[in-house]
Structure formats: structure tokens, C-alpha cells
Amino acid sequence: MRYMMTYDLMEAARNTNQWMGASALSLASYPIFSMIPNPALNWMSAWGEVTERTFARMVTKPDWGIRTFTCKDGKDHLVNIETVVERPFGDLIHFSVPGREDTGRKVLLVAPMSGHYATLLRSTVKSLLVDCEVYITDWHNARDIPVSAGKFDIEDYTLYLVDFLRKMGPDTHVIAICQPAPLTLAATAYLAEQDPEAQPRSLILIGGPVDPDATPTEVTDFGRRVNMGQLEKTMIQRVGFKHSGVGRLVYPGLLQLASFMSMNAERHGSAFKDQILRVSRGEASDHDAHNRFYDEYLAVMDMTAEFYLSTVERVFKDREIARNEFVVDGHKVDIGKITNVAVMTVEGAKDDISAPGQCIAALDLCNGLPDSKKASHLEPGAGHYGIFAGKSWRDNIRPLVLDFFDANSGKSSGVRRKKPANSNVAAK
Image (cartoon, rainbow, N blue to C red):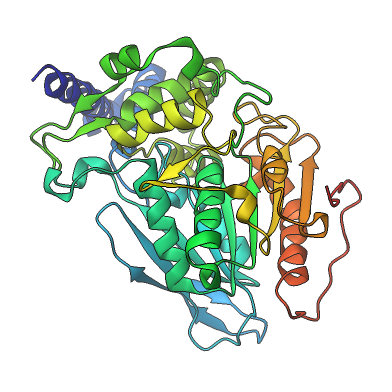
């Protein structure tokens, strides 16, 4: 019961803050107060508006917001979001654009399960829709999954990816972003041994901790500073009665969000203070830069306890994938068995979550892959978010990714883009 009480206590604190914000907004906006203008009331109203929105977003799954798409024919086409594979802990969804010509590129985006929804990759999806048929893993919030659905750890996660890749077929290009990079590499190696015909054409790993010890950061080194008993006692809670997953042991999204915010507390505090001032002056809008970012950033989901704990223990502490000792469903995966799938790594020079060196370690593990099928790119000046959703992604990395697809698709799209001047993509 202790774990359930602490879970509900966090939810009660969130709910109280949301209520306080709504109350302050309502009180300060009472019509009679407009007879005597008072700057304090404007500030109170602005504080209430920002506070209510902030705490309400923490329990709301964002919408994809991708409804139409202008194709090369100049026509607007509807974007249908279709569920291709439906599973208890995550679905494979497809952004279908009816009526447009075949793009020749089928892409699976493997979204991270690290506290945020797959919608965190919305801008990545939109940028790839221009030239690709896009699929993505849509992981579910553990608090909404009944205990009867069973467990879900990193082995189950890997097997989900295996099933998704089998469903999509061999002409698939895969992009794994951040947390799933090592597990996607393992899933590809698993297919290389168990079902070679289902292997993807290419695999691009972006900012993932394949070898966390290569260049430790505050995030990846966390597992070294605590033992598993401490981690389970301090981080794991049991879902409260309000949700469908009542009784399930989870690593709460609100706890993860607190960790995210504490890493850059001064920057986040300044951002919210500035937003309150903008609202009080009437300079803010519902979809301004602050709201667009924080509506997504604050929306968090719970992870199953077994997934969180097995990730820390097996990926970060024991480095099973980095040592090529990872076992899935009783089968020891050998990453060296990858011989046909082209592998590319992308890292950001200023990535403070998965620093340069952690992701490129995948290329050394692929010792059965010829050098001609290996590539790497280090993006100068880019942080973690920028390498898959920011300016660096749009201007430099995305063109390189599309070229890598074409070079390893067995057929040419007929379009070759000029490489950016700061590109250092090269065979390893």
C-alpha cells in the first residue's frame, strides 16, 4: 500500500496545483475587478493561466495534429493515422496519405519509452512524411494497462520490435531515436539469426546509449551511483485506484518529469517566469513557442517497473548490449550476425544525455558488417533534441538520412541531395 499511497500523493499534488491555478485565474478575472485596474490582478490571472495549463498537460496525451499533407502534385491530401499492429503495451501505427504516389521509402521510427509519448517525435514524423511512408511505435502509458496484461521488460520490448519489423517486411528502413537504439540493434541482430528475410534494409541509430560507459554523462552514469535495491525502493510506485492499471508497479512519469526538470531547473524556471510576464502583458498565445514546447515536454507517461529496472541493470550497469551478451527469450543475441543491414549512427557534439561515443559504439559491435555498409555522423553544436527534431535535423541530418536510405534500398529515388558543408559522414 505504501507504493500506492505515494503514487496517489503525487497525483493529489498535481491536481491541487492545477486547481490553484484555475482558482487564481477565475478570481483575478472576476468582471467586477475590471472597474479598478490593478497590475497585481493581471499578474495573478497570468500566473493562474500558466499554472493551470502546466499541471493539466502532465496527464494529457498530446494529439498528433497531423491532418493534411501537401504532396508534390500540389494537392492537399488527408493523413490517416492507422493502427497496423495492436498490442497491450504498444501499437505500430501508420501515417497513411491516400492518393499520393509511392515514395519508394518505407520508414519505421522507433520512439523512445523514456517518460514521454511518441508524439514527442511529431516534427520528425512531419519532416519525413514529405519523402517517406512513415510508421512509428506508439507505446502505451503503463498506468492504463491492466495488471492482467502481464509484464513488459526490455526483452518484451525487443520482441515487440521484432514483430513490428516482420509485419512491415524486408524493404523497411529503421530510425531508432535515443533510448531504443541499443534494443533496436539487438532486435535487428535477433532477426539476422532467426528470420533473415525480415531484416530491414538499413538501421539508423540517433543519440542512443549503445555503450553508456564510452563517454558517461550525468544521465547515463546515474545507474552507477545507486544499487538496484535503492532504485526500486525510491523510484518504483504502484498505480492508484483512479487508473485502469491499478496495482501495477511503475516508474511514474511525474517522477521522471521531476528528474528532467531538475537537470535544467534554472532554465525552466526562467522560461515559466517569462511566460507569466508575456501572458500578463497580453503578448502570449495558445500556440506560442512556450506552449508548443511545454505542452509536449510536460506530457509524461508511466513505464512498467520491470522495463525501467531491467534497462538500468542490463543496459547501463551490466552493459549487456555493449558487451554483446544480451539475451532475449533465452536466446543469446550476437550483433556480429548483422551482415546485410546498413548501419549508420548520428550523434550531437553537445548532447548531454547520450554523449558522442555512446552511439557510434554500435559500429564496432557490427564486426560482421563490411565497412561499406557502416557510416557515422557527428553534428557540430547540436544537443540531444536537435539531432532528431531541431534545425540540425532539418538542415543537415535529414538529407543525410534520406541519402543513406537510397544508397541501401537496392534502387535509386532519382534525387540526390547536396551534402551539408559541415557533414562528416564517412564509412567507419
